[in-house]
Amino acid sequence: QVLLVESGGGLVQAGGSLTLSCAASGSIYSIHVWGWYRQAPGKERELVADITSGGVISYADSVKGRFTISRDSAKNIVALQMNSLKPEDTAVYYCRAQGFGDSGNRIGSWGQGTQVTVSS
Image (tube, rainbow, N blue to C red; front, side):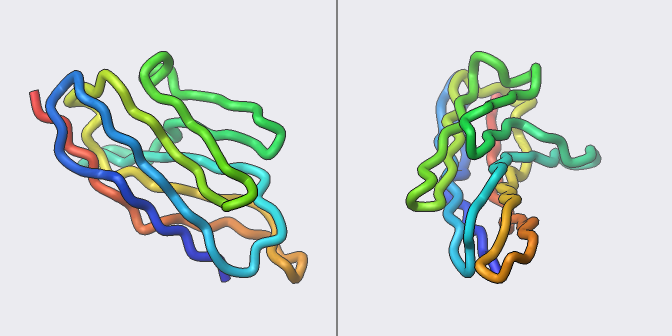
């Protein structure tokens, strides 16, 4: 079993910054893809950014140039630096890890979510 724990959410004014972190623990052999998703009230969950074990990164168009995803593979941690935040970035942000466990089992775990609220 793999546990993902997010931290770093909160309330910030528009134009401000926040950094989210997600730490994975458990029987992890390797994580191939880390992702940050978000879900605003009344909307579907959407991919914000992801990063592969090879360092390939992708961003949603709405956050390009403002958000930066990074990972520490040795520590099984992924972070999301969010700058120039806008009210429309308000959502619950979820971390996701995909890979393999020590037993060769596939991992597809979600964190519990952390609230980000951007005031105008």
